[in-house]
Amino acid sequence: MAMTITEKILAKAAGKDKVVPGENVWLNVDVLMTHDVCGPPTIGIWKREFGEQAKIWDKEKLVIFPDHYIFTADKYANRNVEVLREFAKDYQIENYYDVGTERYKGVCHLALAEEGYNVPGTVLFGTDSHTCTSGAFGMFATGVGNTDAAFILGTGKIWEKVPESLKFTFNGKLPAYLTAKDLILQILGDITTDGATYRSMEFTGEAVYDLSMNERMTLTNMAIEAGGMNGIIKADEVTEAYVKERTGKPYEIFESDPNAQYHSKYEYDASQIEPTVAKPHSPDNRDIVRNVAGTELTKCYIGSCTGGKLTDFQFAAEIIFGSEVKVPTFVVPASTEVAAQLEVETHKGISLKEIFIKAGCEIAQSSCAACLGGPDDTVGRAQDKDVVISTTNRNFPGRMGSKKSEVYLASPLTVAASAVTGVITDPRDFM
Amino acid sequence: MEKIITGKGYVLGNNIDTDQIIPAEHLVYSLTDEEESKKYGHFALSSVPLEQAGLPEGGKPFIDGDNWQSEYEIIIGGSNFGCGSSREHAPFALQKAGIQAIIAESYARIFYRNSVDGGFLVPYESNEKLNDKIKTGDTLELDFENNVLKNVTREQVFYLKPLGEVLPIVEAGGLFNYARTSGMIS
Image (tube, rainbow over all chains, first blue to last red; front, side, top):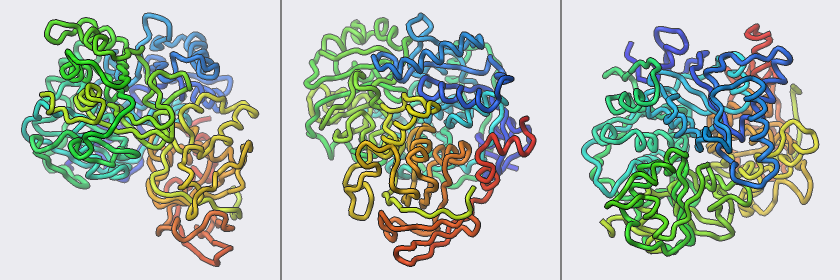
């Protein structure tokens, strides 16, 4: 029977020859990831439920990245990191990336890729909705809550309903003024924030396979914004090269059968898409940048698992180079590796870091930072009636810290162009 | 699980996301410390814009003043309830505030799973749009055995979708109890 890539991976993890959408299956989990917000309560439930004999099913498969509330004086937030630290020490968790050490990585979804935990054909669960990011590596990855994570922690298993699949094909070449962010915002406008609920989102087509792994991760990252269970892109030579550089783990490449069944299919001509924004207060409130151009801004933000990768800063630096920003602009590298790359990678012979500093941007330390508001002292947090344009993933009321604020989501090119002018600006004006 | 619950309904719109249910800055409190975890009840639904809080009129905050428990027991939502993040703190906060069940047209996957697997509250799906028929403050009676919602105030009766395959987990009181009764874990 014909299957999609997601169905094939789930069948393998369930130990079955085939699975069909709607079927509930118990999966063997390859990696469980957690962080400082959901790790402590997950550990709490695991201890409560498994008691004195509580055992981690496989320590090598547990990965913990503190990343959400790191650079803050908030005593509760710091206590959560302390809980993780104690747990890692008590149970000798090798895959713990502690704050204040050289091992600290920053945002979990990028760190999973950089540290070689994303392996094609495997199944990864994480206590974060953006865990779907890892699907860019041709694997099944999705977010769960603390109870499900605690269950996995003790048993290595979890139930899941096999999703129907949606297929998104981007034909042709992506013009230089577009990024993966424009593509996913386009999709969100088409299918809305619940268009993929309990479904898989499969991305394919020439424009998708032309993307770097960083950019592919932007596509799969926002599958959850459409309610998607997972986003997935079949692994190819670009994936293999990235994976081999990061890990020696064996991998298996799956792909959808030509006659696999889809709930629905969408086709786009990549060259016809416009620079796109999501207006307040929902990621599906799509418009083209030109229609909101001139909107006065009080803050610009480039960061997060969605828009804080090296490629995002390369796009932004291209536009910001030689200019000064007109409104406070925050540059928040998602990971410490990206932060280091900003010093090494250059544009016209100048390091990206220097370009941002000369332009007057504030460069912050790697963490989730203001993408989700965070404690009061979080860098870049939206205050009062801020009007923000951001490379992040959500703009629900209050998401970036103030429910009076208005947040526009856009590509790093659009955010950079807007930073230079102080109003929402189409990047083509600078290209 | 009680067979019938009676309480006041609190009506919300579509796409109530987890940041509106419990803003991210509050995710730092202990969920196990009895006293500290009351903060989750206090901040439940605190980021819902005031004009959309307690429909149809709005302007009715879910939590009154310094309280940590709400006067409402059942939430009537629209479509895509609980979209956004994976935070299990969301159904926890609603339960802490006194919510026993939600009746919405549809749910985001992770919120639905968290509600069921964590045993916090019962997420029912309605067969029709209810947030334009029921008003905040109406007295509601929810019959779990027959999947029926009665609006006592307005003498309305609504049939709800059966819980289906998650019913055994709901009845057991969450994933761990379910796994224990079915012999998966000891």
